[in-house]
Amino acid sequence: MKLPIRLQVALCASIAAACVGAASAQSAPGYTPPKTSWGAPDLQGFWSNASITDMQRSPAYPNLVMTQAEVAKMEGEDYYNNRTREDAKPADPNDKTLLDGSDLLSGGGYNAFWVDPGKHVAQVRGEFRSSWIVEPSDGRIPRKNAATVEPRPASGTPGAPTGAASRTGTVQGPGAVNRNAGGGVGSYDNPETRPMGERCIIGFGNTGGPVMTNVLYNNTYQIVQSPDHVVILIEMVHDARIVPITKDRKRPEAIKQWLGDSIGWYEGDTLVVQTKNVHPGQRGYVSKDGMLTERFTRWNDTQILYAFTVEDPTQYSQPWKGEMAFNVSKEPSYEYACHEGNYAMEGILAGARKQEREGKVVKANAAEEGR
Image 1 (cartoon, rainbow, N blue to C red):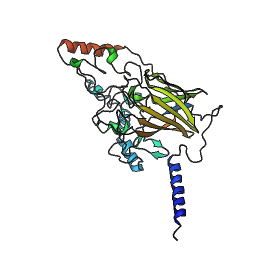
Image 2: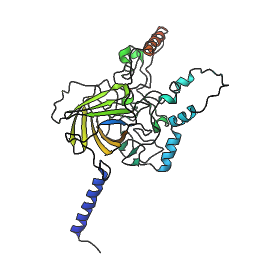
Image 3: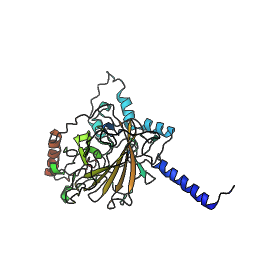
Image 4: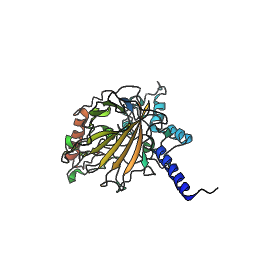
């Protein structure tokens, strides 16, 4: 039976509205998020975004939602999962071979006991996800300059990409800096040009944001709320994001803060945080001219849905969006105890001075962290 045109239009509109509502649902069906004593959605506690799912999608897994077979394949091939299994094997007491230092270049400075990148593909909204990025549909960052590298360090270093990125051979870091051209960020001219994470100023691998990302270890976050503020304490390098709850705060554009200047407000069961004015010296997903909008919603009792939108026309051809899972942590946040000016810093600078005396060109490390 053919329906009248008006009824067809009404039915289509109803179906479309239902589909949009399902697609935009922020909590699991039938779940009612808890409230604080003052009526705000309660997000407090210890959470972790540890996972082998990475920001960008590997070409090996073209779809956002993964099949069980793809999940098994990714987890079975994951570098750190395999390394954990190898490290767990009993040592050969008859092997008297001394290490020659080459293991350090492949990340051997950290055995599996000390790292905790996560073992599993992330489940977001109950789905196994191949990337945090959901838009564009290919799961890739829409950079204006395709040659621009990612703000995360090379595999095998603290804060290194896990999951797909650790297997695809993606070059990380800002690239070499020729000291004869005057040095630059990441060069060996002086301590101030070393990476922010190395100097204990902000966390390795963009853990504190803008866009809080998962790294090699220390993926725990503590959220504390009061009627006027929300504090997000990041385990890696003890970053703390202090977010005033207000829509009316006037933010001075001249002041650029590490991790950016954030304000927040509540929309129903969701905490919305808007971040601008990122310090120009911070290398990450959002520049000093960009803006990040984050949405925190309890999906269920054990997971926060962290949705984000990056708007930065200086770097990207379009805004891009992502969804990340923050799961209840079995453990509290531990002190990172980052310490600047240790033996490593002295050795780095001394090595550079020696190369200068020998007339050699000193280049920046191509696997910087936290910049």
